[in-house]
Image (cartoon, rainbow over all chains, first blue to last red; front, side, top):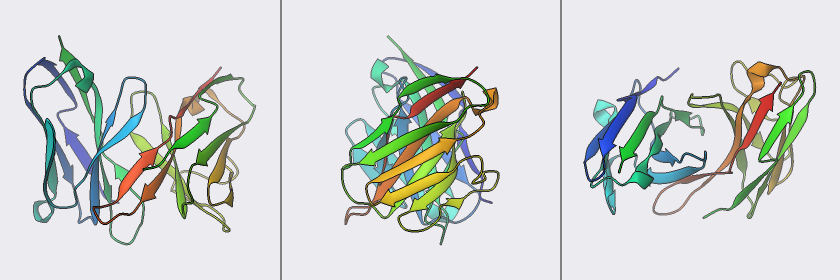
Amino acid sequence: GIQVEQSPPDLILQEGANSTLRCNFSDSVNNLQWFHQNPWGQLINLFYIPSGTKQNGRLSATTVATERYSLLYISSSQTTDSGVYFCAVEPPGTYKYIFGTGTRLKVLA
Amino acid sequence: SAVISQKPSRDICQRGTSLTIQCQVDSQVTMMFWYRQQPGQSLTLIATANQGSEATYESGFVIDKFPISRPNLTFSTLTVSNMSPEDSSIYLCSVEYWAASGNTIYFGEGSWLTVV
């Protein structure tokens, strides 16, 4: 089955720093989404981004489907950005999402 | 958007017992998904639950261990049967909504189970 790898696995930032998280997938996908899991376990959808670029405030995401990767950019990081970031992909014809390995982010005040 | 409520939010269970997790959505959905997240790990799909048909289980998950009900378009239950400490996980239900701007997946708050 499809493999979804995220890097880096762990990241520590000072407040105000910028970061780039990467999601690589091993086969073509129909859809891709990014999620943030806060320290209390709640998963929040950040982006639906099968291709192209989207921005929402300090966050933006880019997916290059032909090269099988997606990037999540976090600018001017805040302590509330801490948590785990997951990408999830939908292989063609499956109607289900496979989650990546995750990036654990800690932002220090 | 969707509001998904899960019960229980947390529980401590004795090994060998079974626990049923409930998932209630505030609007009708065709498919509901159940995930497991073991400590420090990513999410793994257990099964897809469609109303009116048997759930479709992923490799490594079986109906005898994780029976699922889907009695209507807003509700589903997942039972974790004959629990062992390895079943200690967060169990999450989710739904997907389609919109012109794209699809969005919503998750419940999760049910944190500890098996002792």
